Amino acid sequence: MPRLRLAVAAALIASLALPALAHPGAGGGFAAGLAHPLLGWDHVVAMLAVGLWGALLGRPAILVLPLAFPLAMAAGAGLAAAGVPVQGIEAGIAASALVLGLAVAIVLRPPLWMAAIAVAAFAVFHGYAHGLERPAATSPCA
Image (cartoon, rainbow, N blue to C red):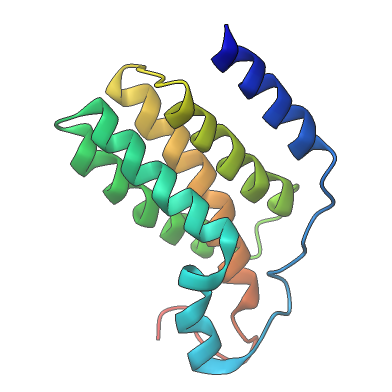
């Protein structure tokens, strides 16, 4: 019961947060782009949660989940490059940190396919945000 209360409290607190709007038009060049996944807390929390959740679920999730995330990020970046509209990007990124963190906190053990789909769905938001940051004059294939 204490874990459920903690999860509900965390969800309520997170729902009060305003979007950071850290992605669209962030710019900053190569060094900023390289540092962002390590210093951007949205990415740090998501990466840690995916790795921890995979470790909690054991094999093969410890390999599948961390691989599903960058693959789905690439798909999300492709959607942005193709101009496909996706709504709620910042909310999806925030939800990824919250939901994946809660999955670790409550030791959620879904079937591997469900965990992989959840990870991939959230990763699309992260990838889409980065696809939007791509300068208009560059090729997404370069």
